[in-house]
Length: 160
Image 1: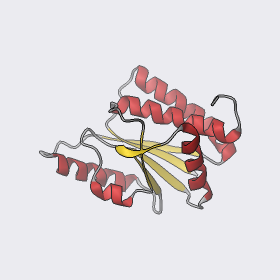
Image 2: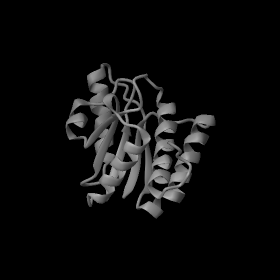
Image 3: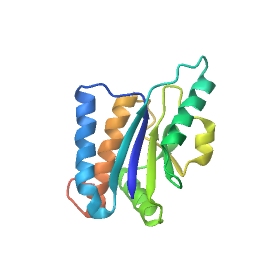
Image 4: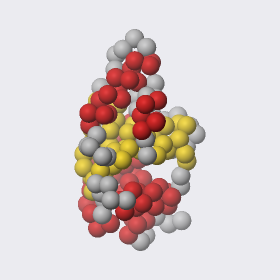
């Protein structure tokens, strides 16, 4: 299964981009052994619309353009379901085994994600009850993708 990341906002050069890149590189190298591969990272600029609803709708339009036809969609949202690392790995394995070829994980902008995306999503997850800046969310999800591969392959990186 090809897994992509969609993010509203761009990571500028620096330690956050380097760390996210390091985990995505590890995921890209280790993932194919368990049927998961890094497809791409799509970054889009935040909408400059005058109100939050319009910004969310415009950002959702950018995500829709980036989605492959028939793609599964996972949203990262503060109101989503919290999973531990093993449950996240098993969710990815379930999606992989469903016969779908593509999965996109979406990180919304400062205003969150459009309700239409929530209605279309195959899963809505959170990374804890705290609010995180998108730079850290990118690092956290990149690390969890790599950790999922290690869990699914029985590698000792993940010690429960």
